[in-house]
Length: 90
Image 1: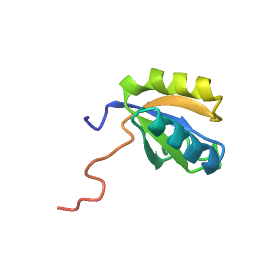
Image 2: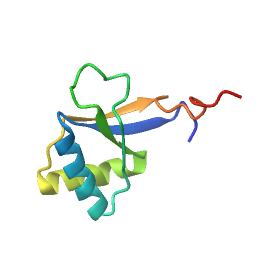
Image 3: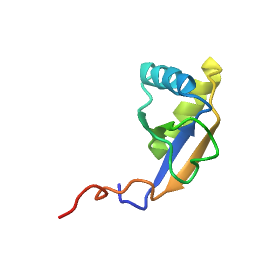
Image 4: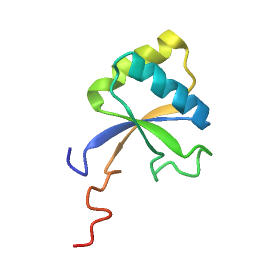
């Protein structure tokens, strides 16, 4: 995915919610990964973690959340949060 591409983040009030949902989604076969909370929302929540989803996994994630009544803060689309060359210096 290009650096400006749209990514979906599930945000949490605390990391226990994030880890619990990560396990639920993984068990349900919904592709997700643990990621730092995007800089665009840092300061709004105390939890520094999020779950990163590809666009085609968002609806499956929503269904899993509803089925398990999982706790989360919000699901937000953000563009350009991942910089593939961030730590490359040459």
